[in-house]
Amino acid sequence: MQAVFLNTFYAENLSGASYAVNKRLELFLRHQVVAKVMTTKFYLTNRYFFEKHFPNQKSSFLEFIDVLTSTIQVPEKKVLVDENFFNKLGFLLKKNEHKAIDRRSNYVTWTTYPDGRILEVSYHNREGEIVRIDGYDYRGFLSVKSYYEINKDNHLCMTRREHLNQYGQTMLTYYFTLEKKLRKIIWQTDRGFIYTFNSEDDLLITALKQYTKEKSEKYFVVADLFITETLAKLAKLNEQNNVALFVQLHNIQFKETQENDPIRIGYSYPILNNNYYNGLIVLTDRQKKDIDSVVENQNNIYTIPENWFSSQDVKRHRLVKWDDKEDGLVIISARLDKVKQIDQAIKSVIFAHSRVPKIHLEIWGSGPEKEELEKIIQQEDAEDYIFLKGSLDNKSMKKRLWLSEAQLHLLTSKNEGLPMVLFESQLGQTPSICYDIDYGPDAIIINRVNGDLIAANDTKYLAMRLEDLFKDDEQGILRHYAFNTRATIDKYNESSIWLLWKNLMEQTFKHENYNY
Image 1 (tube, rainbow, N blue to C red):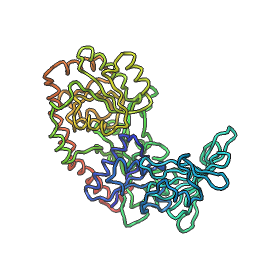
Image 2: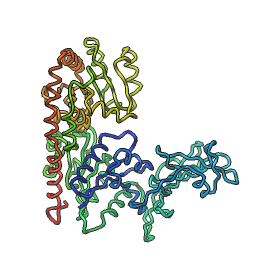
Image 3: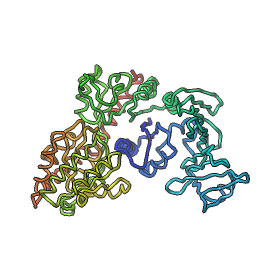
Image 4: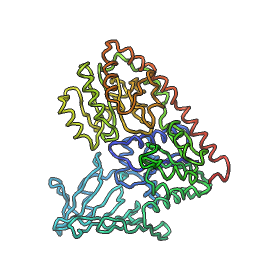
């Protein structure tokens, strides 16, 4: 049996969902199950960022494009910027000018992966217009050719993108209009058969069917996706007798709205059509209860948390000492987005700091709300105790949180799935104050035991609670909370979480004809 986890893409700033997918990947690999992460959105940098975040798992990564171009297994080589590389292309390298020129005054420029390998080579005509960009897979072969034209608005537009195999043969071609819309996709198989597609979702389904075509193998597929059209078309995969398709529901909200629509955000199709899948996997019992209340078939909805703690985590947790923590340090680790409501946390810290001056806040993350948060901090003259730390220095953030240099963590979001950051803070014996929201905080935080659960948006109480916790010089309550984080480590231990997955797989493949 093989497990396949479908994720969107990988970037410099790793999303909580992507981190959770790879925690699951690690868990399956640790228990000798062949497992792969397959990206469903093509970016040339996907493989690089995956390897950067998860170097020990790089052999488990593949793009859905890799399936269609027969490049799942390709020997790796480093392609660097040097004269030999450009000479083979017919250009003379002028390194000081950051270009290489041919005899007819056409030239190329280039960009590299952060580690110096060739990423893209842009071909310019004598007038300086880009006519083509070649993309190099991180493993060192020419994998993409993109062709460009100028549209009527004088904008440069990609009109065609070719995906090549390792031998330079075009296997897959995307065609676009000058209005940047997809026209069609053509796939030529190794045997020379040609197929035409009108949407990338149809192409994705074909790639998955191609990957799972070995009838003697069973495939346990989990889709960590949220786009309705994609999830709807993915249901076709579940028609194969050797495939069991599950949809992982991350950050969903399932409540009545002002418009009487039972779904506020996300995942309406798989929830209301759950019989098309082998099952839905939710993260908390509270989440499952809400979904059970509106679906007809409740027998294929399973609760499996997205995180687990290894024996090494247990050792690291036990080494933490409260007296080594930085006095008064409060931390937030979140995307700087409106849904995280970090402005509420800032205002509460400002009030609490005026009463207990040692309180100071570090905010780790990046996002569209950065400028707005900076304005609040500046307007309140809080620059000397509230700091936006960004997200580039991810290792330092983990040190502050995991190695318990913080004394308190705050989570003030409108909604969540099962926040990974709560697991991270518990690992570092860092208690949390959380809004009691859907979903996740109440699955990890027991009120007044290992942290505080407070009513959503109650900034006055949040400010008062911060004051109460830090005005005690002995920090008795916070120490008590920190000590009780060990219960979280025990609850989400590796063997318990693996047993849930193991039982689900065994139950799924127990009968020969298990699909709906």
